[in-house]
Amino acid sequence: MTTTILGIPFTIELLCPQLTGDGHFGNCDAKAATIQIDGNMPRPIREQTLIHEWIHAVTILNGYALEEFAVNVIASELYREGFRVKTKGGSL
Image 1 (cartoon, helix red, strand yellow):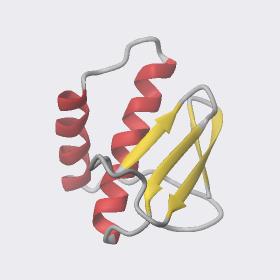
Image 2 (cartoon, rainbow, N blue to C red):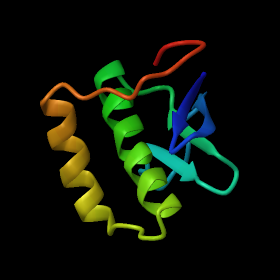
Image 3 (spheres, rainbow, N blue to C red):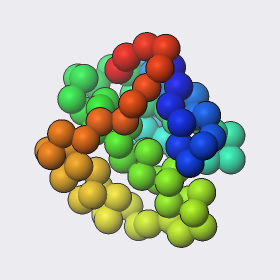
């Protein structure tokens, strides 16, 4: 599955088993243009996590990474308001 962020194609991977043992639901590697999401979570949490990682990618690629708390707040509100990241080649 892919999405485009600032004109750059990003690969989105759903990982099973859980991504990490430290409680993170996803990971963004802007240099490698990849986003990894824990595939064992319910769909709404995967969708919100993708928004969270999308925000990380957008801010990192623009040279200003936001603190984790700010990303959490923005992603939660965007999800609540109906924002979804457009993807191709699959679904969450």
